[in-house]
Structure formats: structure tokens, C-alpha cells
Length: 171
Image (cartoon, rainbow, N blue to C red):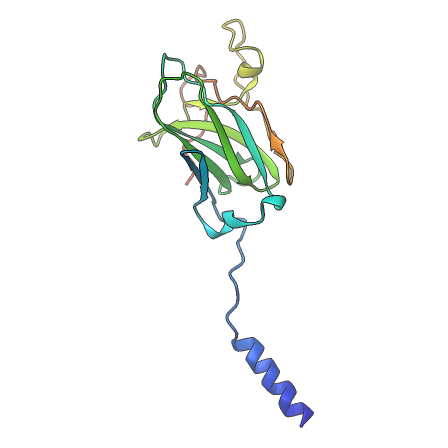
């Protein structure tokens, strides 16, 4: 009798629906609209205690700024990224916040909406040296995100690198 009950339990467990487990190739993103963040995929809905945030300025070299998307792209796997939309506005340096970012190391880029080419802006050494014309270092600065922490002052404001310096928009 114990053998029959054990066999029935094994069959019941094997036939039960299993929850999907996100893989490292998932590309979660979040979008900010009116101050809210909405996960775009199931992988992005993980506990906020297990994720972090990145915040800073989304600068653009003009009086206002066009609509753009800021991406945090994994430095070890470009297929893993998080993003936030920054709507068109009159402030040349609006703030952005990307929430739900898995712990890891990321490079930050800005892409104008409607442009699938290389990034136009990035967080680089040029930003750290004050966007000064005497500085010519457009090397990407890696940003480390830890669980439950917000990384601040990550200003994606280097739009002055030679064309093609930054990678194309992640997919």
C-alpha cells in the first residue's frame, strides 16, 4: 500500500505545473511614466530586496532634451540589461532612475528614441572630468549594483565621444 501511495505522489508532483525560472539571457527592462516603474517581463518582477537601483542625470547637449532611453547593460553579458524611458522635455539634464536591477556590473548608455544605431550618450571618464574640452577620455565607467542599494550620481551625459565609440542599442 505504501508503494502505491508513494508512486501516486511521484506522478502527482511530476504532473504539477512548474513556475518558470528566469535565465541569465532574460532582458528585463522597466519604464518610468508619471513617477511609476513597471516591469516589462516576469524576470524583472523579482523581489526588490534582491535588486538595486541606478539614478543620475540624463543629460543632453541642448536647451531641452529629446525622448531617449537609458540602458544599464551587463558588463559580462550584453543580453542582460535594464532600461528606463526619459520623455522629451525642456530640462537639459532630467533625472532618471532604473529600478529592479539585478546585482552585477553595468555600463550605462543613452539612445535617442527612433535611433537603433550606436548609443549617443554614456557614463564615462569624460563625465567624471567635468565634460571639459581638455579631457578626451571617453572610457566607459563600470557601475556596480548591490542587492538593496541605490547607486547615485551616475550621470549619462557624455554625448561628445567620436561616432561609433559606444555600442548599438541592446536587443
